Every structure is written in C-alpha cells, then in structure tokens.
Length: 223
Image (cartoon, rainbow, N blue to C red; front, side, top):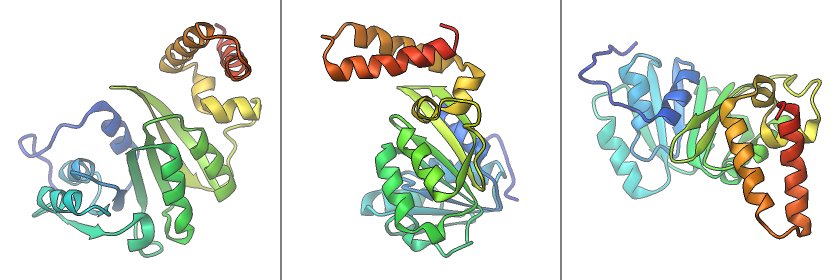
C-alpha cells in the first residue's frame, strides 16, 4: 500500500475522516470528488492501494488531477458510476451532496455499484435508507458527525438488511435504526432542536405531522 508520512498526509474535516474510516480497499471510487481530498488522504495513509476519482465538472476535474498527481490514482471525467466498470472498485464514497441527488446517482447504473458504499449526505438520510432497502443493500453502520451541520455517515453493503428488526420501520427509516438503538447523543441534540423549532411554529397540519415523528423518536430514546 502507499507509504504514510506525517508530512505528506493532508488533514480532513471530521465528516470526511468518518467516511475514510469506513472505506475498504484495495480500490475506492470517490464520486463527485471535487478537490479529491478524500482519495488523496486514503492513498497517503495507505488505506487503499488505488483510487478512482470521478467528476463531471471541468474545474473540479482539473483540481482533482492536480491533487492526485504522482499518486496511484486516476481521475475520470463523467457522470457518477457511468465511468466505472462492474466490479472495478471494492468500495465507493459519495460526500457533500443532497440525499436525493445521491439516490439519482446510485440508481442510474446499479450494475456498476461496488459491494460497499459509504455515503455522507448534507441533509436527511431517509431517501438513502429507503433506496438501499429496495436496491439490496444492508445498512451496516451509521454515524452522526458534528461540523457545519450534523452530518450523517452511512455504510451499506450488498446483502440482506436486518438493521430495522424490532423497530418501527417508518421511524427507523426517518431517523436511523443504528442511531436510535445507540441513543446517539447528536441524534438527541438534533431531535431536541427540531422539537423546539416545530413547537414555535403555528400548529398547521404539516407541523403536527413532523412533530409527531420527532416526539416518537425522542420517546424511544427516553427523552
């Protein structure tokens, strides 16, 4: 694997560090790589042997090429998984996008998706959990990481999903089965903030609907 030196390694923010810890080698594809900070870190720390960085915008594509120069990496210009061959990558990461946009990317070329997916959306992860259930991916781990927002980080692997067993399905799809089971402190913080915001709004139908879900989740967490 690539050699690690403290001088070479870049510093990642917490959300990307959480993603990096879930990536498995030998080959990782980073979709929508932007400045390619994640694949550069994975290579420099020896977590993967080879990286494929994918960008569909010319400016970020050129940025990624410069960032990965001299490393065992390839930067490909294209849309999502369209530029990968089936089975080429052992894992893939998608970070810093909306969950629904990620679902679109994941749905366009299902035959090219790897065994393991590590996803870090910038908003609620419910659409990704629903997609995974229908696409044959099991939710094996989920985290919340403090940053500009509270970011969810989800790890999926092909297989039968047992994460939702024993939990109200709709509640777990909304807020995360592993997060609920763990009583994750950042999930509690997020839910309490949502409850405060919703209670401050006029009690119209959609507010009552959302508040009911938040209250159910907090009750499950013992709040």
